[in-house]
Length: 462
Ligand code: NAP
Ligand code: MG
Image (cartoon, rainbow, N blue to C red; front, side, top):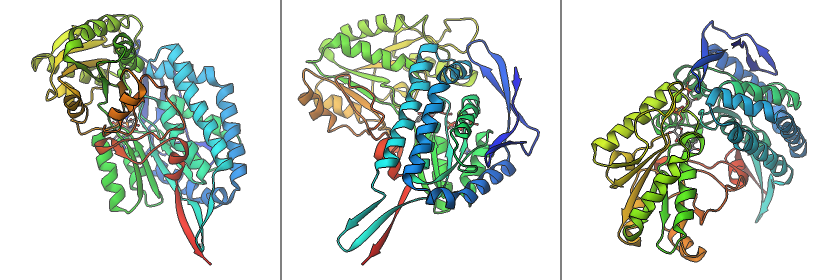
């Protein structure tokens, strides 16, 4: 058990203003592994002041120099990749291989992509008789969730720094350790004092204080739709820019000509990855009625293979919430084809990989986000029916389409109300804009679109 103290503010670890601490629990064995300070309004205020003071200097730093700092940051993340992976495994419970490739690997790729973008982006352009400058929005308040703890921080911090903004991050209370590690990496990379600041703490205290602080120009939030709505209201009340990356309930649409076994196996792997704690997971599998029974059998067999491999959920609260949804699915008449509400292990916050069959579009498990390893398989009669079901939730973050060929899959994907669609198993691309239609959010992260979120224009007419 390690008791960490201090907040990373203005380039140094400063004592926290209050005595409160947060216990960090390893969800695989339920042991307390560390404590971090619980930040207060005073800590947030100190961090925002530091970020404001650093803003003019960083905003005026040539993009090539900002790019060099981001490249140095990427190199530190590479050097500390094992430590990052071990930390995420300890506080999130993710299996070591996933921690290496995804939790540590993706932030390296994203930081690298912004080192390149900062060096090459057109921060100044001509249109007619005008010169348009793309200037940093200012001080960014970033509030992040625990499911991809480092990725969520990097997906906000890297583009903000590339743009010339300064940042205060409030990480999720469940996963503050990798956030502290990131602050050390920022320091090692020689990023000037005050450009990046970290305040650990509780959402309704430190998170809210950050969103409400008049010194914050842009609030970037990733998390639940319920909290996102509150943050959006606070930000609009104060006329701040806001970016919201919220929940999802993505559809995996398998059209009749597709390779059924591949589509089902990849679909199950997608849902079980990170123990189902992925906002863009394809939690609803849509199958033509002629292929339905075969698909359910394949999905149940695929899910059973994850029983001994899957990690725990992040906390007892999340485990109980997911089990509640499983009980609700049974109560509303869905059929358990694999898994169920019982835990596969005695210790740890585990949930069995679960597959529901005979799910109809109106059921709670087909409408609400379940942040756990639970797949619903729904049947459709024809393509129009599939489209109606796919688009029939308040969410629109991601999805997948499988068909005999790309043209057919793309024709269907064009009609989906969602920000991302993987065509016949297309791979994650860290340069492609990520974000939601409908109640899945406002704004985009990653790549050039993600950078543009942190910029505002100024036009000179000649
Ligand atoms: P959450 O409860 O909304 O928490 C997200 C962050 O907001 C945490 O840092 C949390 O602090 C903080 N927070 C909580 N209440 C707050 C308040 N009143 N004011 C300011 N900040 C507050 O979400 P979660 O349960 O941790 O994460 C899961 C959700 O995130 C899912 O719905 C998922 O779909 C969504 N998500 C979306 C994306 C995307 O890109 N669209 C990505 C990942 C996750 P605490 O940690 O102290 O609660
Ligand atoms: Mg929470």
